[in-house]
Length: 99
Figure 1: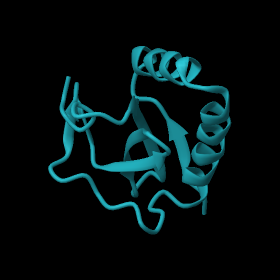
Figure 2: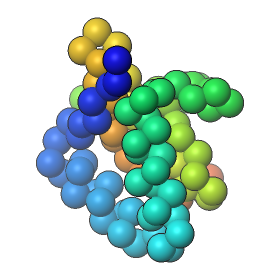
Figure 3: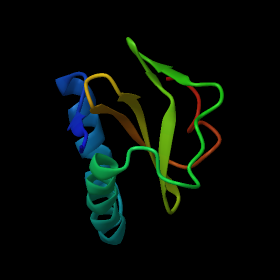
Figure 4: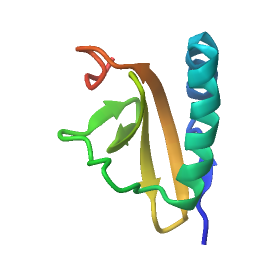
């Protein structure tokens, strides 16, 4: 059974979309493919959990999906089969810190 992709709030969705829109065109295409892959398999092989998890508002990013120098930060609700998309960030020294 596939998972549903959701954003916890509209403001997080807007931030996510704005960051993806500011990324290079080839990264934007990879992001859309990666998001589709997360629906089918939210725990891809080779992508470890984030240690320690990153608190974001009332949510916690426990997983990441690597796309070049960018990361999709998300959490999984197995009970309800939902992948909560929390952030899209460029990889730097502050990527895994709460903001």
